[in-house]
Amino acid sequence: MIKTGRLYTLLVLLLALASCSQVPQASNRYTYDTTVDFTQFRTFNWYRAEVPKPRAGAGPQFNLLLDQRVREAIASELVKQGLRPEVENPDLIVAYDLAVDSSQAPKDYTFPAGFGYGYSHWFGYRFRYTTTGLADYQPIQALPLGTLVIDIIDPDTNRLLWRGYSEAGINPTSQDMERINLAVADVMSQFPPNPIKRNR
Image 1 (cartoon, rainbow, N blue to C red):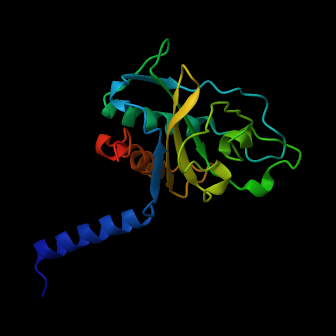
Image 2 (tube, rainbow, N blue to C red):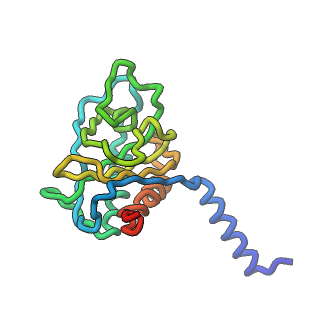
Image 3 (cartoon, rainbow, N blue to C red):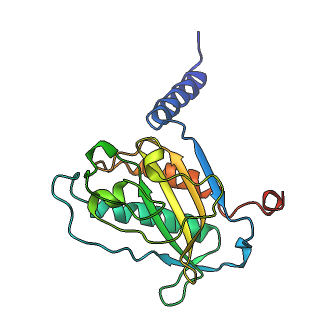
């Protein structure tokens, strides 16, 4: 017979495993400019994207609550890394995107160079920062559906310095905060890049 204490421990373990199984293990990757010293940065702000009207029939209404929650999760991870929010003159600017169904993309739409059809374009956002020169860079449409992408940009040159992404299976129409927080933490665990790796 299993003793009461052991049975309780076994039940707690099974419940923990069951809850973890609802959020699949993500696959994260990142790429960055190896010439940049990321230890010099102290502050951040959000990339100011152009926001035209949502395109009719191009996807669900942009979810302001989801946007707020993703931003809060990213900001929380950056603060843990020692950066602080700064509106006026930030050292870095941050943007994010989600890979969505590219089959719904308008046939007559031309994307900015280096970009593709993601959640940001689903609603009508336009990111205009430069992505050239980053090793292993992939546009959003090349990533599996539900992939969360986080970009770190130089506000002075408008150039992408670091991109991390997690194949987390995020549904932009849902409010799955556990999945969002885990995906953001997964991506941001790779930022800033390890200086040892930078010198290889």
